[in-house]
Image 1 (cartoon, rainbow, N blue to C red):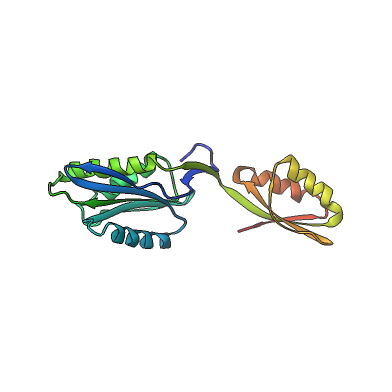
Image 2 (image 1 turned 45 degrees about the vertical axis):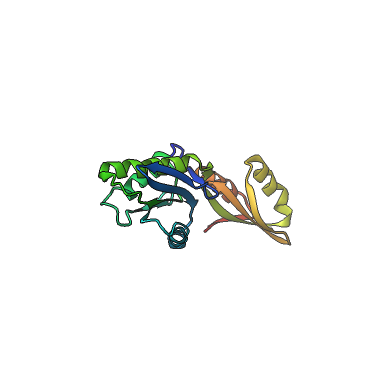
Length: 204
């Protein structure tokens, strides 16, 4: 992944479907953003219906930033000739929380294992090239609790460090839920912890 410990690359919306041809075989590639494994099966089932003449719907996915999980599926193609070449492109583009799919419609001429590896790799590469890849920041969330009279002190810190408030409750006892960049989280926690009449705790 990136050198910075709290950034990662992903996509925000499905890519346009691309078509790659090799010896009359057609390879349809697409990239989808995913957040959990449960999202994968419905997408594959959708593609099997969309490309109902496809002999294989192969794919690879990766989830997570710190604790990475991945899977590659050849869907009946020779072992490691489809899923792993697709996954290799996920690693090459340094993206995560993505599913890359390639549906193959056989054209009547066998490509051989080397040809398949090249075709699935190329299709995955083309699909990722058409994706809108963005960089995101890992964040930690805290609940800051304080009396209303401490509002100016809290707001001064929030403005100084450009902290994002995700929710708030403003009464006699106030609460802010804040989002902080992972690499700045310890510093922000220490700043609030050092103040009297202000409490801060980490939340999931």
